[in-house]
Amino acid sequence: MIPQPFEYHVPKTLAEASRLIAQFGAEGKVLAGGHSLVPMMKLRLAAPKHLIDIGRITELSYVRPDGDGKVEIGALTTHFQIESSELLKAKCPLMPEAAREIGDAQVRNKGTLGGSLAHADPAADWPAAVLALDSEIRVASSRGERWIPALDFFVDLMTTALAADEILTAVRVPVLPMNVEPSQPPRAGDSYVKLHQPASGFAIVGVAARVLLAEDGTVAQVGVGITGVGAKAYRATAVEEALKGKSPGSKHLEEAASHAADGVQANADLYASAEYRAHLARVYTRRALEKAVERASGK
Ligand SMILES: Cc1cc2nc3c(=O)[nH]c(=O)nc-3n(C[C@H](O)[C@H](O)[C@H](O)COP(=O)(O)OP(=O)(O)OC[C@H]3O[C@@H](n4cnc5c(N)ncnc54)[C@H](O)[C@@H]3O)c2cc1C
Image 1 (cartoon, protein in one colour):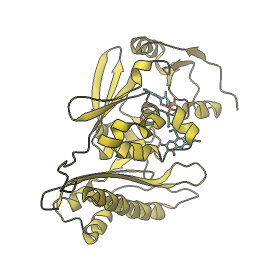
Image 2 (image 1 turned 30 degrees about the vertical axis):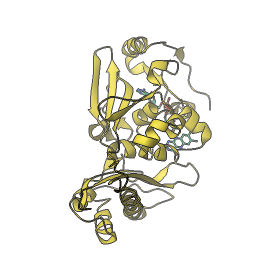
Image 3 (image 1 turned 60 degrees about the vertical axis):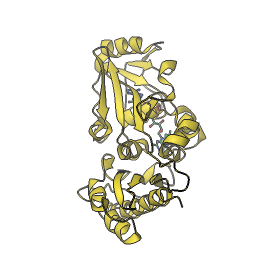
Image 4 (image 1 turned 180 degrees about the vertical axis):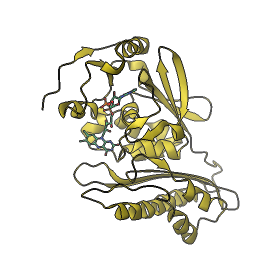
């Protein structure tokens, strides 16, 4: 189908984009990679009168250390740029691992981190990753800028904490705090595992995990983010609480993972019933934890 008519704006700077989005209010929409918005416009599920294409604002495309033990990723950085970033592979391997699971090469070359997070599709991959990592999300408007913890960012189905006049500008992810003593295990491991919907490639279930082990081998810290199961991606706090302080053997991992869908109303569709999705959440959480623990143990 053909989208409804719209005016097309191409700001060259973030300040100009912020002015335009403030000027047009609810009639304006930011366009990044266009791989979610354009299909929605063609289906006439979205009909903005003004399209503000931020794709040429090069200052929003980067991956760099922020000098504070974190890596900052600009909102316009594509999935492929994250997948192939040497800095992220070394410092925060969960991000490239999750990027590899997104769509196909064309989607990964055009789709952006900021666009995916702002869109907040309940089956998108990035929300699970940024939640597990305790990331922060920077947003800007003509009123100034603010950082939003990922935990507070996803509000409901395709609804985020972004105000109508705000543009998502960057994401800050904590690096994997690895033990660099060569004779010792790294004691920190990340992982992302996903069951793809066979037609769309989106997550039926996607689980991101980060595990930090104490010197005695018990779990000191753990973060688990889950997508595809409920109306929005969520942090599996019941899993984390069940695992903290325990030795990460298979019995404890299985027990902790059994809480993966606690308190969540699981989605049901033609492919997977609510019960099946909740079951998959538990299975994929166990697998994500096993993989992260294996890496933290240097295996
Ligand atoms: C065939 C296909 C397969 C896909 N498979 C997957 C998959 O397996 N996993 C997955 O996670 N995703 C998948 N996607 C979605 C893809 O990752 C999109 O690129 C992503 O969801 C949106 O990013 P975008 O840059 O294309 O955003 P756009 O489509 O340009 O925008 C999406 C929404 O976000 C808003 N927006 C964009 N950027 C900003 C910003 N910086 N600040 C504020 N608002 C903004 C727009 O106004 C719009 O409402 C798939 C898409 C397609 C077409």
